[in-house]
Length: 40
Image 1 (cartoon, rainbow, N blue to C red):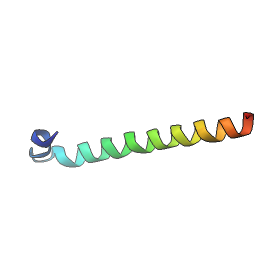
Image 2 (image 1 turned 135 degrees about the vertical axis):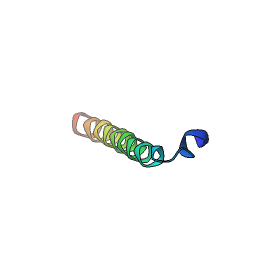
Image 3 (image 1 turned 60 degrees about the vertical axis):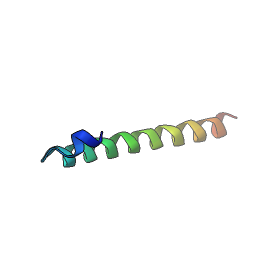
């Protein structure tokens, strides 16, 4: 990861991708928790 981050122009794309993946993971986790509460 550190090696890719040093390449000019690639850092921003990686940051966007990482942020998108993080948001999707958090949303998925929240959906799972709320789903269990609603069904539970």
